[in-house]
Length: 306
Image (cartoon, rainbow, N blue to C red; front, side, top):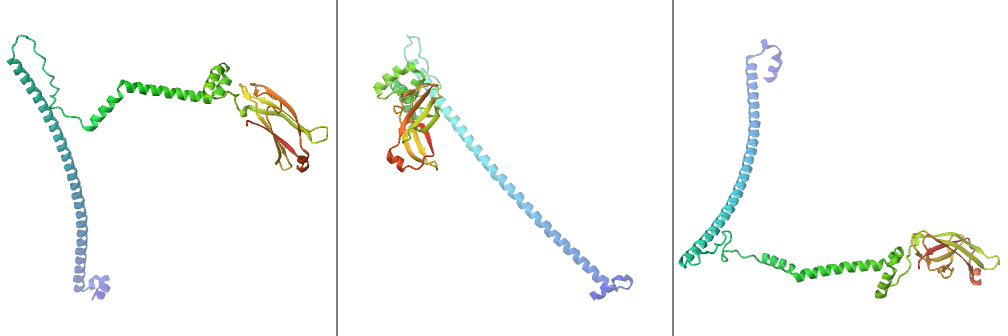
């Protein structure tokens, strides 16, 4: 029947009446199904909205209860403080009345009445004792406020500063004397007491070696001569350094080392500020050294403080 209705739908005048009734019933059923689906969708959305609204109301009620609880606690604290103040004022008034009644029973010859106690001061029995921590704090403050304790603190503070200054002066004594020569007697006296020694300042960075030369003597033996000039670039006198001479082979490895003190090359113990010190001294290699040494290709001269 359904196939027949579909074929005759193109020609309405030839469509049977039973096909029209079937088509109307099908259309009505489809409409009712769509309305039912739409209603179920609207019902689901409404339920979700109601649940969200109920959750928001629950949160608001919880917040309201918390606010009411805080307000009740605050009111209770205010009422307690007010009642405590009223009790204190009542006790003070009762004390004044008692003192006035006692004065009325006495003879009025003197005419001068003692002043009543201030209202803000409670009796000894009404005062709240301090807790253990407050008593300990007051005891500690009282201890540090004592005259003997304050004097001891000042004494040890001054002593610490003096010891620090003495340590700095002892450590920097050579530099201070080099820059301020007029302080040498004072530092010499300090060194006599402490057992230290005043020496020239050592600043190897301000010592420069110039014009170094190392050559064989004309005798043709194993005799050599080393010549160099030391220059002090500092503005203060410096201690005369030692000299290290290193003979190098073709690979610039040291095969012989000689250390020369200031007395070895005839120099004083102190090199004056902005001055030069020239030195020239002979050096001789022993027969054993000359026989075992490889060919000497160079040399190196360095200044250092031993």
